[in-house]
Length: 230
Image (tube, rainbow, N blue to C red; front, side, top):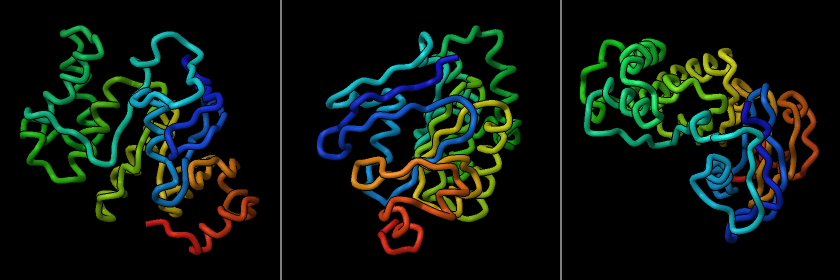
């Protein structure tokens, strides 16, 4: 087990102000806030893609890189088939060749892409590409999955498909940490909310309490639509 993930006095340039928090195993965590609040930067620091300007980031266990995954708002597709995209992710993770075919096929089946396994990934629709990005993560069976606004560019139908897959990750025991500015999505997928405002975590609360009785004035304004969120 690599959790908890601890951030101690972490800041990043003028985007994130010094903050300390712990991400524990179990219930899904939604990082909520308006555009420009610092959600994506915080996610990238947690995942290890960005180094903080100040402070430290630490995991409980050894080698967290192989036990966590991240899916972005705009996934990067390799110039190869959908199947080969998943198989390559497994190769990079050090999975033995004899296991890759089975794991890749299982992951594509899980996200509903078995029928397009041998199509070039870059000709798939936006929703299919995002499902493929989730398949690459699923194949690795991560303990933690970071999702940076994974449905921001998708239509309602594709969004429902992605949310169904996220729920499957959650049900399988993977810890979900997801950023969004979508209040409805936060309600559907979250167990707790970290509300970020201008680079600061101004509230952390269970999902029901956050929406029923937010304590931070910035959070109350955001829920009422009095702060910009798109």
